Image (cartoon, rainbow, N blue to C red; front, side, top):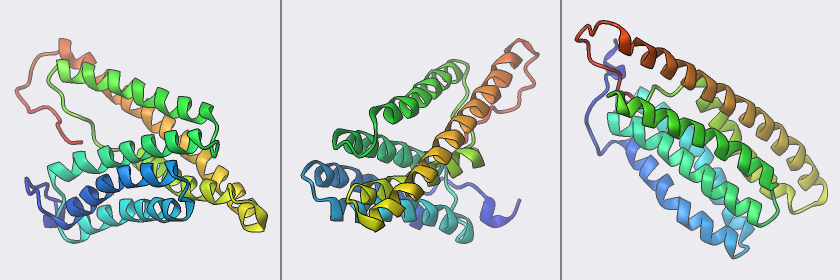
Length: 203
């Protein structure tokens, strides 16, 4: 394993600070979208999508991959997606069925994580498909908000936004099924002889 891939216990790293800032932007976006400040809300959404890509790149290039970051980054993504979905659905920017589809996936994974925790397992490694789905959704939301403004730009944003949204939903659920399969394999080993090896705890 290269030095830059070593997972550390550090807290104050550049990627973690970016993830912390993204978490702080969640209530800011909620207030902006609730009060109808769509322009500022659009900027916050775009910044969130860019920061989600940036913190992962910096973590690898700076050798600052940390256990906290492995938990904090996906947690920030999920919280931002949840708040964004609820805010946009409340404004009729996205339909409520999209909220239900994505929350159903999160509920499924929550049950899976509880089952893993009961047997001493930590969260599973983030799959590339899940990360790609998150990227697609974080890019879809600002486009769908822009589409709500109408006009030629709005029409183009609507097409691109829904393309990202559909790909995001498909990848999100595909990754969810991969996580469930991985969890099923781990739990099925409970009847096997314990080898004494540590169980996976990466996020």
